Length: 465
Image 1: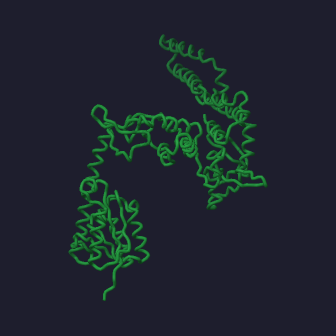
Image 2: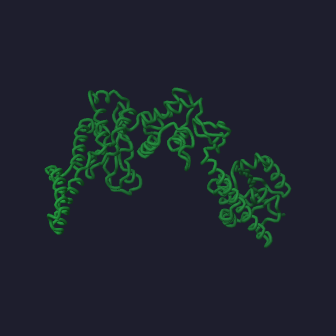
């Protein structure tokens, strides 16, 4: 009596196929289950990839990956599917999977295509021909769809289904063309999301605020998408005016800088109390932004927050072992921020101001002298060699002077903005803020903070100018 084979049923249908041809997963499963029973096989599981095309990368077909794990554990003797195009339309991925099946003595069967197999010469030929034809057909269709989509995008036409619409947008027919427009039911909400995010620079904080105010209407995934998507400043691929914008391109660019500063914090590290300088400290050795950590001390629990190099503490790839105490750093900045700004302002002015020697030059006199020299030469009162040497000398003086005159950089205006923020009783106002708003305050004026190599202290502050 032959051994009863353990059978895994694999079923797949793309969204388009299900709509157009009714090739539902349920129909495939019913057909294959009956087939396995007729063969006397024991069905030990079924694996379904719904809405996936067989041309998709192998890593994006989760059911295939799960099935292969069972094959590697030697729990499956045969994989059963409907047709070859349910299994693979990609030659390369087919043979990657086949190598795994062969290594664990697992075979496959295409129930509706008995001529497809690897046991006979004709079967192997059929498999390779079918895979090549299917792959070519899929690639041709993909190129055609890509061409049509690119043309539609250039014309501002909507190419998305409801499930793929960005939060805050909907599709409406405008002048006979379906276009992406702002969703009137969500427009005010999206504007408030961006307003809160730019003020507090926290994705998690924004989601919590919106959901506290309006109920569970917003998710962190939607927030992450909004931070990355170009739709929100009106662009998509090569069309800079694809849809109505919620923010400007400058705001979008600023948002990417904010995202780079955001350091991922473990869930148990106080979601309620954000770190004031997260994403601002830079390791002086490896250049990575320092990570956040904390300790709890005392009978009355008190958090001591500090910053350290993750490359050193997690994987020993950096030698910077110093930690920066948040309270100490905050106190230092509060007491020295105005001095640091003044010093940086003077340093920039010294770099860009004209050289001292140039200040003493009366450039108008040299320009007049050059005019006199030209008149003398035109009237024949000076030899040509004398004219050439004097002309070169005077023009060089004028060029040197003009090259030394550099207008003070536009960053001066940014310093003025920072200084206006630090006017009046700003420290008293700062102390009244909650931690989230304190963090937003520092991010509004600081680009990065450099650390001393030998001590866990601040070396230099780079301001947003």
